[in-house]
Image 1 (tube, rainbow, N blue to C red):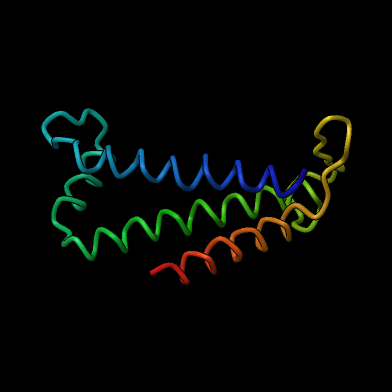
Image 2: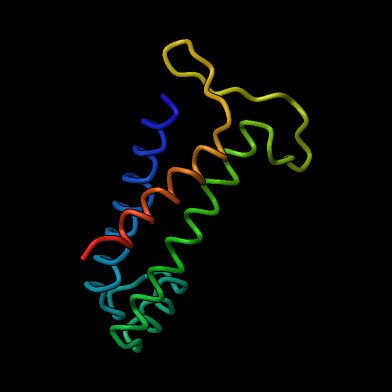
Length: 119
């Protein structure tokens, strides 16, 4: 069950979200941005070379990956949450899911290892 959850999280939060960000950055016009932070991010993005844009999205992937790992660590107890001492558990179909952070790291390592072997 944990592996299925990790695959879903990876596809949803890394693959799909980064694709959505890429679409937004590629298609946003600065003049149409109403949010000042977004306007500045789009302005920066439009100045980047194609190779720098790839690095930009790798940074986003890394931040999302770290956020997921930290969140899962907070749930499984491998990360101490600030100002929160209660025990958390995540269940699926009545079964407690365990070692979430470690399972996430192993899943991502496996996915990245497979990608590096692609032609």
